[in-house]
Image (cartoon, rainbow over all chains, first blue to last red; front, top):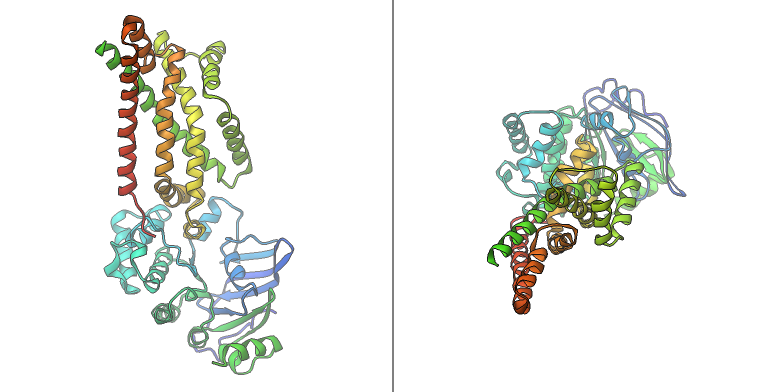
Length: 261
Length: 215
């Protein structure tokens, strides 16, 4: 199930470069449950890979293993050529290069929006407060929540909170961004404001791994779609190919269930 | 007589303030150890809390006041100051367990996702704890922490049995001087504790209001 070595041929995106995230033969168990089965997937510089599949298929787990929020039992994961280190300062260092956006936003409830974004740059990148504030305001403006900078997370709508979470991740100037179902906890009318930011990010050339149910986003922004079921990557294809002519039975079944409405 | 009570109250306050700082520091360290990813630290803190928390304070004080000098550990030349320091150590060692357990219950209320988000932007375990988890944990446990601190204030009275000048020893001296006023003296002592504890309660009420977190 190795990734297509040259997905750029018919891709709407610029040609992806060298490998950035390499997941090789990864296995993961939760007790008896085999959550990830021999997963191999390579994400190249500048590439957007959308991971879809039924719930419980392991897509979120896969996403979380990439910055070691979940440990793995077997296999290797490398980021920009470096193998994920064990717990400790090196892991923290590596995580700072991997942005992550969660389903439930996870903004720091006791800090203002601005402080949420500046915390990482100040504590990890050792930026001065003025520089960090300037950087944060730039990013908050980019995601359209600059007027909320002095508020607390609970005062913002879900869509605004998620855009702040994206800004918080971007403030670390990450090499790759992971999105773990970023729109699943949002009210329908707020989904697009978040997806718009993500599409823009993809067009700017950010490397992204996106676990989502938003097929529109996959069509618009993805270079490749990875379809997971029962802990395996069943199929990897370009979005048009995948949605119009899926090869596997399970993908056909999944698509028929979600595309009937 | 008033002089006696004033110096007694000062003695109690001094014990209280020193213990307050000490037990908050040690309690935070113990709580951090109990949630750390290192098993050795977790087990150490767990054992310490279980042993000391389940020992009567009087016994802890016996250990400190008689045990430590027996091991040739002294902190001051003057016997009075030495007794005060030893009693403070006992109070800190004992109260820190309750502070640690209270904080730990607060840590459990901070959504795991926030700690994950902190780790995901590259904060270390210590930074995650000190900048994201503990500030929120402290705010949620201010009411029970208030109870722990008020209990500690009253526990300073046990130090009177170990050569310390504070309210209880002042009360005993006063009764020796004026046995006819025993009821008055007992009530006066109770009132001083009551006033100190009420002030403390008020401080915690204010902290609770000031540090509320929107969720």
